[in-house]
Image (cartoon, rainbow, N blue to C red; front, side, top):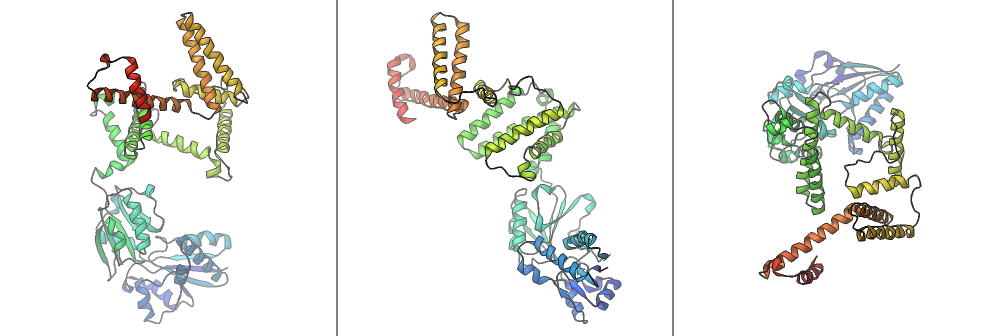
Length: 487
């Protein structure tokens, strides 16, 4: 059985290396270094230290994951018959992906692994930037930095910022959540005689020339409340305070039912912002919708029923479950296949839960705008074959409903006329659906067109010094025809 002895070279100079580690390195027959770019290596070389390094692997691979996988693979191969020493910077269990890969692979290949520590760079790092990690500290890998994992209220140490390319990626990630001029500290060779600390605004992070394999970046905790306005946790705190004992009287008295109209209003304002193609306005209006979600979630939390965490869990779990072609194996060709799969999964969920629908048409909200609901009802009925396959019968149905409506109006039967008018609209929705026309959007477009043209009439009358009561319908209609040419 082969054996790999993994040694940590420590984080600083040779005089900081334990005597036991030093002796093992100097007396070993074969020593492999992940990289020779470490302060102690040059000092050991002066004392006759020989080794093989894997620096050449970095040069032929663009991705660090590929580098680490190839190094660990070669180490396993070299250790199959003999005992070898593999030395890494710092401590073998701190920011050392190759060691983790070796541990995983050794179980399959029955390779024995022995770990002998070396001083981690972290102790020196804490001392260099003078922080106590117990206050809350994140240590993350600069080569695989994820914005969603960062907690800006804590100390953040980003290690393995080897070069300007990685520094640039780190900078761009941080600039999504921090101001461009937020001060960060670049720490190189912490704890050694070559230790350097340089404080720079975030936007200059990738312009520093001292970046190397001993570089880490320190991000101090955010204390400026305005910077935290981008943080979801801060939003949650604000809503809780508004609803709390010392909060706002209006927010405190709200219920799920009292907020219903506000949610609807905010949703319509989002639609307006989309139509305006104003991204800034859209972001603002989406924030207003999110406010409604947060208020409902806080009301649920206050009542001990659910929290915003349950809301997030529910939608996250649903999206993953209903998109197996994305999060599991499989492939779909177009959006129609996606919709079909979505409906099938939804029906399967209902069967598994024992939920029974009273009708095929169940599940369409009654509070939905009438034209939208009509289209939804027709689409569900069409899925089981209750639909025309060609447009001619639909045109006949529209004409039939119009005739029935006209008949009731001639008889001055207001109640029946209203019902027949509803039938006319329902038939027109069916006609629009055949031509792939969204009835709600179509009517909204006409509403906006009417608004613009009528506003043109108002402006024209004002320019001419006239009022509506001073002109007749024929005069207004002439201006209307002018408006049609303008909008």
